[in-house]
Image (cartoon, rainbow, N blue to C red; front, side):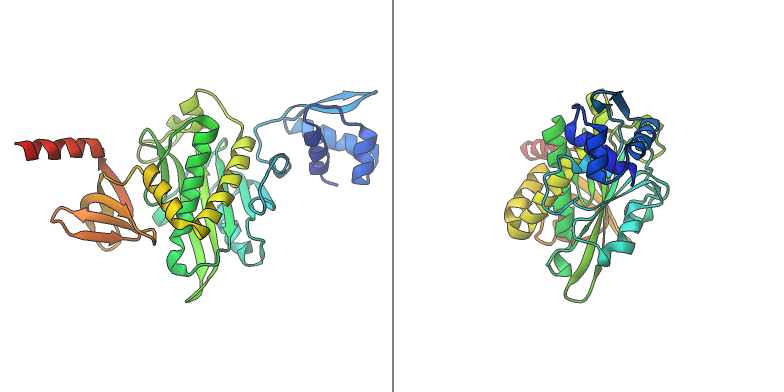
Length: 334
């Protein structure tokens, strides 16, 4: 028996007393075995009261991503129904790719720390304790050409979660970041395996700066965290539960009603309307981001007026759209 069975029994009551005899009977073990697991949980930071006449009661739950805490209250149909938890891992995406072909759709890999986390173009993604580092395995019935819609769905899901739980209005920065006050708070890395006309699977890696001090991270650009924005730590269990629910909903929406999802993505975008620099393996140029097309490509109006379609690359925001509009108006009136 693992301690997770005892933890699950305590979580189901959430503050109520649970008889040691009943826990033992439900799990098919002895009361001595239950007591042993209680001691291990206490050593892991769980505050559990014990009473000879009442049993056990969970008083304080540590800020942990253990699956049993997430399962209790998770309202999804398939996303997160199977969670693989690792205290420390090289990369959750690497773990997910190795098990993807035989895994159920919606399987999640969660880690407290990543030692080899990465972002776009192989960049290192720092993943210390306090964040949410996870990967989700999805198996959409869509052609490979539409795979970027999964990135759109997950971006929407993260933005919705941050808004609904914390009142944070996150902008979606094409192609895979979310920002609050123009500071990065989340990164998304999508990897896939595909045949010529079908997707085998898509692995979506999500890194959220949750309970972290951004000033202690050695990264390029400005970043923030949920705890920094709110002035206090949040429950990562609640964050993951809500995010998995929002991912499932957005994933279904993108596959069934893409125009609606596209409109919401555009409304939440922090990139559209801004002057940007696009850097790809082939070239580099500047222009104004004008539209996201049905394939997830960004359409850029270059300075010479030509519209260029960009499916992959780094997008650097150069200045706010409002400033560009003001300068354009001044030039016209002059």
